[in-house]
Length: 253
Image 1 (cartoon, rainbow, N blue to C red):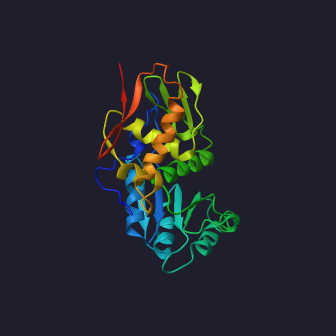
Image 2 (cartoon, one colour; image 1 turned 135 degrees about the horizontal axis):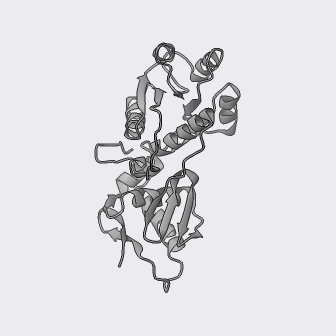
Image 3 (cartoon, helix red, strand yellow; image 1 turned 90 degrees about the vertical axis):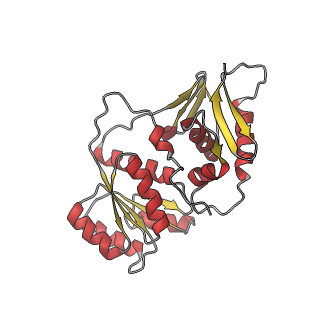
């Protein structure tokens, strides 16, 4: 399992901000009794400019909801003093705050149940904090009625729109899987830097991923095939391997 450390910079920090953008400061309440999860999510949201409140149990969550009135609640199903689903139903009796539920159970029936009791979205563990951030943004945008801002990451002929899961090379769409797209965005956000496999695993697969680090190599191989299918086509960027360390996405002349 890989934990986020001070050198693991969230991808959202590098998103291109729209000129003249003037977003109202928003607050998020994270209710989870696992310190590593709360710290990881808090870091990502604070890097993106959000005020973050944390609660380790249902009682603290209810008190903060009443006193602080956050814009969104991230609620774990398994809490020490109450079931998260029961708490969600109680909150829904008096509040329409967007609720994103976290659960280790990924069965379809569990997700359906979570949505039926009043949750607005449902994320299963292990998860990428980046994915939770994007889902939370969508929920808050939906509530406010504000149109989603189409932000982009660019290098030479390569353009990616992280929130829309779109990738283009010289204006031509490239179809990528979810993991391929997230790996590419992570490298693109850190263009010119050597990124370790561990950092990619932590951001793309999630902090609780317990599989082989070499899974990154498999995804990068597939990514290269899709980005560079024609060896004769001259492109001004490349994904290079730094042996024994990881990968670097860089511009070529």
